[in-house]
Length: 610
Image (cartoon, rainbow, N blue to C red; front, side, top):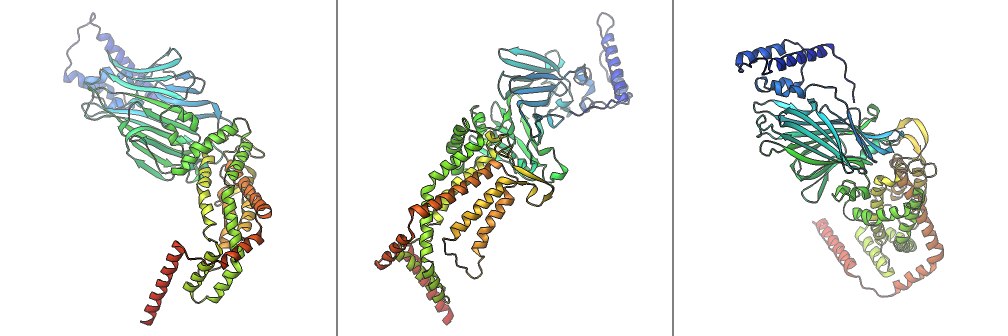
């Protein structure tokens, strides 16, 4: 929390106000003197006396209708030796400031940041919490300016901190924080009592919560990609704000709002869905050189509807880890705030990779668990790899004949395509057979791409030279930054890129890739892939790069086994020659394709005659 500077004029002003209030209490004693009825004249004199103090008063005090509420509200504004209150359990340590009832500090006791410092979601003034309400004469009051009287108690295993701003007899505002002995949840309630006569109930009280999300990882840019505001609304829907720039939404029937900081979250959960809220997010990492502390600025506004002129709302805060299993245990759909992918990708992560990796990492080091999971995945996909490789061999065998057809019909594209399709049909080969296995592997590829960056289990787990599998594995700090690459060299992406290069050589070497006029050289494009990966993954989680390195090594190994011990090129060639001799009628798609091409050729010739 920012230190408040001592202002002597403000101090003198508060002393004078205290003297005036003391005198007013003294003269208002019934056994000493009769109290004259309030008149405009003596009220104006009191106002003039305050104004002549020439000291800055709290904004809320300046906005109060002094004729009716000066004596009542004055105790809200006075710091009567307020002491920061502390409550904690096995998981959380909280500090609450009686001024505003504000959370000054939220520390996760069992975790540290990338500098091995205590991990604190809220500290040093990065958190703003306020409730603003309107009086009947149009004045706006803010709870952040009030001083609350704290009272700490225990109920069974719960610690309960009550903070009350007493206005008068049976008139108060109250915040209540409560935590169990071992939980990431904090119960929070806010209520008013007896102040209906002072407030304008036509304007709802407005609860505002704003937080600047602290950096907790080595790469602030990478962490910023997975730090976002997410909310659940309208039954089972989930949505999120933009990861870059500034974004704002006003969803309805909101079940929870999550300020997710990659591996840690601050989530507000109302007791009942909120009719409407306003959420906002602003990226603070667009210029990393100017900001090395915060990733995002999150904002939330909630209208608190009055009931008979009063308001009462119950919430829960979740301050804890962004771990799928932990969030799911609360049975509030909070785990949906983790971006595991949509559709089949999310399904694979939730029901296959999360349970599998959780099982393996329970008894193996996390790096070994990644390798073993990769082996299991590649073995499961080996039939697809086999079919893909057989297709490549067939295309390699047919390459000389395809080249002959290209030369023979170089001036007639339609005829060339017809003869090529006829050759494929007679030989029993399908040029698309190599693409289908790749498409089948795509869901697994993308699911794991989304899994590793958000796997909390990898955080601060080391393997070989990588000290944190959830972050990059720097083996050399450059001392300067290369655009799109970074200021360090990560080794796992280099190894993965080398493996991809050799895999690409093996696959392209089996395929006929003729150069078409006006088309890019596909071999050059495919060789660019390892280079692109080298740059793209330099700042990514080393666990993901380790997976790609091992996965490509295993794929190369499987292809070598298939080539040398399973597939016989001569037998495949003989089979193709045998198929060519058999009469074969063009089937559905081939027949339709050839007919369409013939029709297109006829139309082309018809236009040329005209």
